[in-house]
Length: 75
Image (cartoon, rainbow, N blue to C red; front, side, top):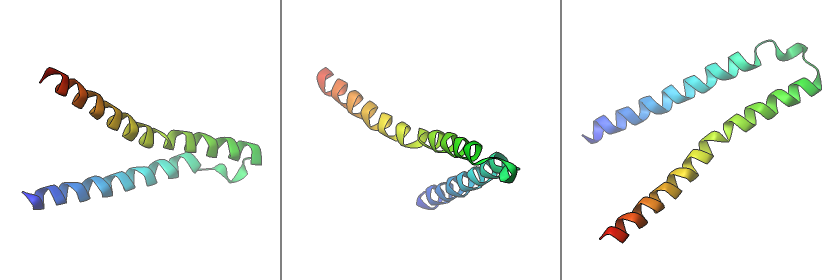
């Protein structure tokens, strides 16, 4: 069972890395001719989109605390 979980974790990690690399290539394809302002705007949008992962993590922690508190109130 542990081997299966470890394998699935590695597949998820490698798949995530490959997906991010593919999105990076797609987003930055042909940007060598952009002005500095356009490049800065592109980087700002990429960094803003990257904030989704930490926000989801924090929301997960908040949801867990809420559900744990609700469960304790019922018992």
